[in-house]
Amino acid sequence: MKCEICGKSPKTGNNVSHSNVKTKRTWKPNVQKLLVEYQGKIKRLAICTQCLKSGKVKRPQKVSE
Ligand SMILES: [Zn+2]
Image (cartoon, rainbow, N blue to C red; front, side, top):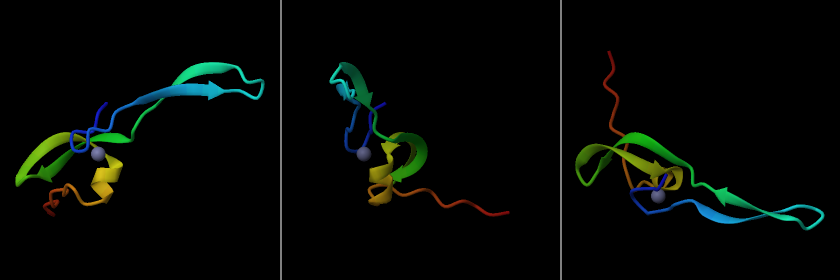
């Protein structure tokens, strides 16, 4: 899954064992589908946790009661 704010997406590379055998692996960004406030609108977006923590999007306030 790709982050809809910064465009971060999975990357590929090799797992390298102790005997130097290489096998393909992927690194996935920590992307969550969340209800967020972005550009003044409340939307359901796939965003990475780095964008969430850096304040690029806001979580809508929970209505208590
Ligand atoms: Zn992001």
